[in-house]
Image 1 (spheres, protein in one colour):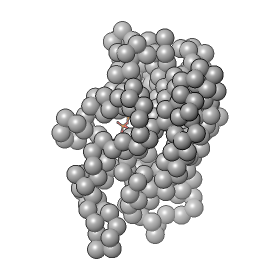
Image 2 (tube, helix red, strand yellow):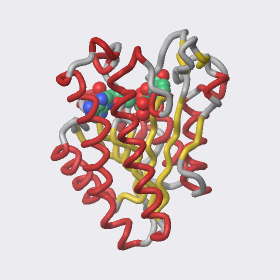
Image 3 (tube, helix red, strand yellow):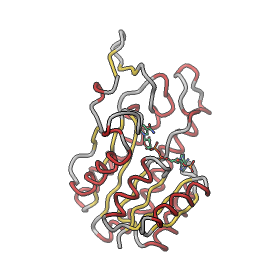
Image 4 (cartoon, protein in one colour):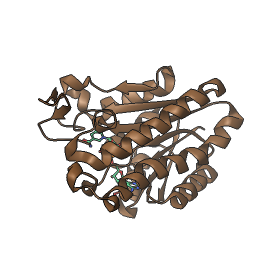
Length: 240
Ligand SMILES: NC(=O)c1ccc[n+]([C@@H]2O[C@H](COP(=O)([O-])OP(=O)(O)OC[C@H]3O[C@@H](n4cnc5c(N)ncnc54)[C@H](OP(=O)(O)O)[C@@H]3O)[C@@H](O)[C@H]2O)c1
């Protein structure tokens, strides 16, 4: 049985992706910080008849990520698909002129150190097997920095660069690295914004193994509009 590991899984996108891959025969490792949430997600997956296990870890701590993924592989089998998708914290989202060095520690830990630790933990087995998928999920600030969400704008950009480099060097080795940009609030409107619809997109990124970056919806369809300064700005409720 193949294993999907989700670093940063909750009741929204995480659970939907877990169910989507589990329906295809994957065992699922749920990794997040709150034990009660992790236990709840695993119980729901078991209730659906799926194989799943939970591991408590904070993605901001590389050693915790490494340990969780190591335990997941030992319990469920080698990770064939890794999704990195911890929800950004509110405190990551400050205007640029209010953002200090200290304010960037959390975003960089979560969106740079965490992904690097996660990728480096799963890649040896993927490379030995000659197959694997790494899925990175981000909001629009990964590609369009916005003043209101400076922490994610800076750190998602770094995560994007790292993931794109992985895409380039790993493709010849049978490992597909993809990034999904979600420029809207998940579950906030049309059917395409539902976690289940996005889970279908992530499944297709794993199976179709094509481009690095996919937009869940074009940015200009999601309220991103040019400002007088020529910068893209989003004026409605922001997602990072
Ligand atoms: N929600 C949106 O509107 C939206 C919009 C655009 C993009 N996205 C992207 O979609 C993904 C999240 O989807 P979702 O919002 O539906 O989330 P979800 O899968 O329902 O939950 C994500 C989980 O991430 C976990 N998390 C947060 N910080 C963490 C950390 N430091 N270490 C480990 N786990 C952590 C939280 O669980 P614990 O508290 O238990 O750790 C949270 O429940 C992210 O990649 C995000 O960038 C979301």
